[in-house]
Length: 166
Image (cartoon, rainbow, N blue to C red; front, side):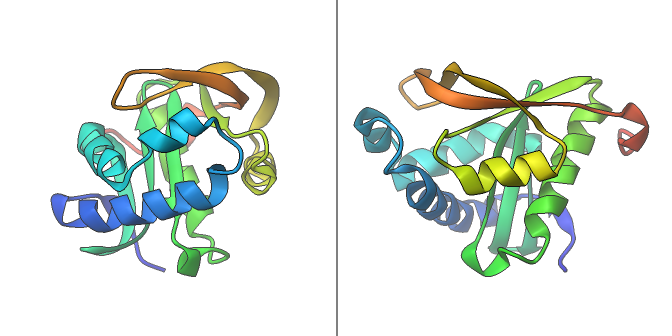
């Protein structure tokens, strides 16, 4: 299994394709059309630049298999390629994101999940995330926050399991 590492610019174009394809596969039938229209390949590529040091991946440089991005107290994004599904990579990326949040001092993290994405919701629940219910939440777009109804998951983080800060 490839190690989890910091994403670098050589990873961004393939990560944008992975994210674009994975997002449309999981969400297009369940989110407002206005949001889908904003979720272009270029928008995903631009958003990757904004994550900076908060974006981690696994796989050879230029051939990433998945990624996890954190923001503030949020596990913001988690996607793996179809070929990496079922390998444990998603769980490893999730644990890495949790550890990075804990290392920042986050005590209670959250993530958002499309209500109909039952596969992802079940995965988060298995990994100790608590479904605290559906609410109108904001997701980031190039046009600013876009609000619609999503599931919110929360998890208390243990600072002892966080890696030392560099």
